[in-house]
Every structure is written in C-alpha cells, then in structure tokens.
Image (cartoon, rainbow, N blue to C red; front, side):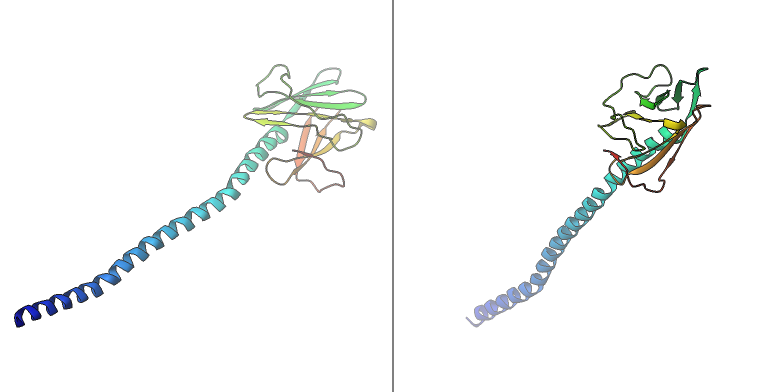
Length: 198
C-alpha cells in the first residue's frame, strides 16, 4: 500500500514536472509561430506599400522615357516649299505641316517611315501658346495626338505639358520655320497656363 502511494505521488510529481517543463516550450512554440505569422503579415504589408509607390513610378518613367525619345531626338526634313516636314525617329513617325497660320504636329503608329496614319483622338485648335487637350492615347508603341497652334509673326515655339502617372513634364517644342530642324526641351520653368495631356 505504501508502495502504491509512493508510486502515485511520484507519478504526480513527474506529471507536474513534465507540465512545467513542456508548458513554456509549448507557449514558446505558439508565440514563435504567431510572431512568424505577424512578421509575414508585416513584410507583405511593407511590400504592398512599396509596390503602390513603385508601380506608378515605373510606369511614369516608362511614359516619360517615351516622350523623351519621341521629342528630344528628332530632326525634321523639309521639302523645297518649306510647307511640309516629316519628323522621324527610331520609335515614332511625326508629321508637321507648316503654313501661314498654324503648326500641326501629328503622331502615328510607330513605324520606320511612310505616311502618318492611324491617328487617334486629337487636340483642339488653339490660338495661344498652350495646347488645349481633347485626349491622348498611350499603348505599346502608339502615342497619337495632334498639336495645333498659331504661328503668327513666324512664332516657332509651342509650350505644353504631358502627364503619365505622375507630375507633368513641361515641354517647349521649337521648329525652325526655314530649315525645318526641330528640337525640344523638357522640364522648362512653368508658365501661367499649362495644360496636361491626361
């Protein structure tokens, strides 16, 4: 009888010891699992926040790069009458028609040469330095729009801005009405009237 009581007490003692030993381990394991899950949630949340900033910035830089390629690196060749200029670069085909009252620049589907076709929605005609937008199209290698402004007194500069997912880029496009050589500057100082191509 005494042996049985001793055995029961020893068993109870062992159970208490095992419980006390295992309990912290179990709690530690659960806490570690919970903390790992919390860490994962935090990591995914941080990644999501970063992506929310990174994706527009990436798209913005791509679009800005397209504008830069389209405007900053082209030379216009003019025919003998200096009334029609074809502006061509590696990615876009531009056609600029020069007459007594207007400069019309149109862009077409990305081609290496040929006629300026497949125009999308265009910008409205204006009589000031600022282009009034209707709408513009961005997709793949297509960037179609139309700039239409007065060239009274041989004015050869047109100011406008473009926007693609971020702050607008301000452009100053210059066309030599005699030689047809065209150039552009971006991020020029802001003017009182800027219109965005949204």
